[in-house]
Structures are given as structure tokens and as C-alpha cells.
Amino acid sequence: MRTLCSSTLIGEFFVIGFAGLVAMKDPDLSMTTVWTVSGVAMFLCLALCGLVTRPGGVVLGWALQIALIVSGFVVPSMFFLGAIFAALWWASVHYGRKVDEAKARFAARAGSSTPDAA
Image (cartoon, rainbow, N blue to C red):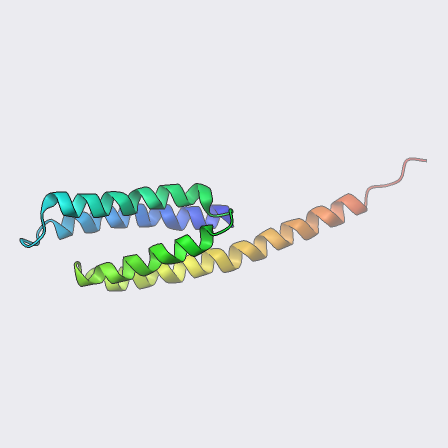
């Protein structure tokens, strides 16, 4: 699960950076505000890469997905991109868990099928 979720978060890192560049065109937003918000969100993406397998990591990831969708009120294209990344996050968590379960079953089967030394 960690690999799939981390890949999604790294993709989001770049999308948030590009969205920050687009948001700078808004005359109502200061550059400081845009880069503070974008910088915090980008940092969270990187931090979540390491926290995704810990308790609460997936929930924090969902909070980031919601924030990404809500950022569409500032950069309208983020409604679409946020929804795409929310779907990718769901797939990463869902299929990542299935892969982890399959690996655990395979490891258990491989451990129990070792020949006895007689």
C-alpha cells in the first residue's frame, strides 16, 4: 500500500505546485498567501509518504484529498484534478491493501511449505 499511496502523493505534490503558479495570477491573492498554503500542502504530501502506513495516515490522506477538491474554489481546474486524485487515492488504498494481504498469504504459505529436515 505504501508504494501506491506514495506515488499518488508525489503526483499531488507536483499538481499542488502547478496550481500555486496558476493561483498567483489571481489579483486578490498575495504571493505570500499562495505559497504558504501551497507549501504547507506540498509538505503534507511528502510527510504523508512516510506516515501512510501508520495509524491515521490514510485518514490524513483523505483530508488532503478533500482540501485538494475544495481548492477548486480558488483554481477551478482543481475541482477536476482533485476528484481525479481522490479516485487515485481510493484505488491506491484499496488495491494496496489487497496486495499487502496477498503478500502476507504468500509469505505464510512459503513459510509453512518448507521441507522438514530429517
